Length: 225
Image (cartoon, rainbow, N blue to C red; front, side, top):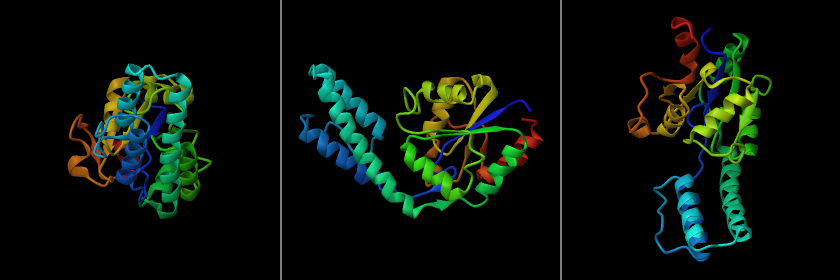
């Protein structure tokens, strides 16, 4: 095999849950504005990563103390964690995923999950999929120095698998995933199992998009990957 490890996104790639991301981001923005950020500094159309980046820029310009900034970061984390953990009750496994992960593991691949959701949420999802013994590494929000789409997320996932970046590839359903792979300089396979395939890869569209992770073993075998 050309590759030894696979790094999977979670939501839209392995599972579906009903996290109300728009309401979650609206709550984050509301609290940040109450804590001094300008009105309308961000909208729920932005990703949570971008919202937090905009907050960090403002705090830097305002010379906020590190203690105050960390308190606000912690408050944002609580908002995100609460929304995600509540949604675990709605989790639905994408058809064929547990069986596929076991096939890949039996073929000798090491497997990681890299998500922008919190670590506990990812662990609960793995338990519900009954693939605890197949997953070697779980990296959630805050487990890497930078989240996807930054290169560090993928590079650190490879290191956690004790591999070089050219020994692993990423699988995901969104351009945040493909951008992360491009930034890290590794191969990427897209899947069409996310909620909005028509918009999922508006930028950095991958050359390979499979219908589902369930199609991955056949693709890897046919292409000697």
